[in-house]
Length: 290
Image 1 (spheres, helix red, strand yellow):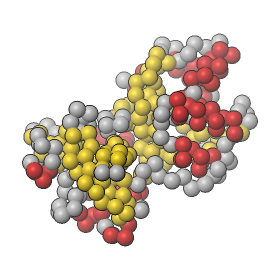
Image 2 (cartoon, helix red, strand yellow):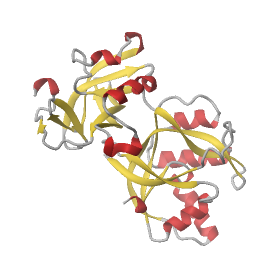
Image 3 (cartoon, rainbow, N blue to C red):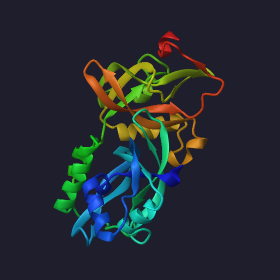
Image 4 (cartoon, rainbow, N blue to C red):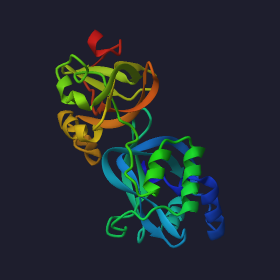
């Protein structure tokens, strides 16, 4: 399916800018339509690419655990990849790569996106070309995407804050459960609140397993943590998550969802099971009351 799906995170989110370029170059508009918004996990904005056409720095992505880029998955029409490759200078400038992105419920989607490899990028951030930056920002606004704070920081060559500092837990990592201590030390925990999130909860071989489901609700807890990216180095191992290139070999994978606490709705990471075959649905959606 990835051959038909494109994950946009930069100027191609801006329909007017993309259509203008297509008209000038004699190309048709490359998209049939929008599929969904989605998150590219463990990736971060960086302006480390110089574009002679834009006259300054343009967007690229780099790896960072616990970070994510919010973008849009588009359905590409016949001939659309040729248009996108031409615009992005692929394969000699940007490269088209297959990635796993995740919708707002944690469902994985295989798509393709464009990234400039490290050997072609500048060794340090160079900042954003101002007109280009506003084109990207308008695209984010048009699709109601998160990431304006992260985009601004990257454009200024500053440290980019994480898109969220929250983790939603629903089983053995909850307070009073066997693996609660993995969330420690206490001084790194900002808040720990009851929460609920969309999803369907299973018990598989005595373990709690969450799968994406917008029609169901799971009870759990939302944890705000000062060093979430460092925490994931341990929790990923505990959950048997082997990375986004090896989902089929992982027991769980880490993706984003929106959970709700008494303070409102929050973006948070959660761990989803890759396989619940032989499991039993927990109808209450509550691990403690299964």
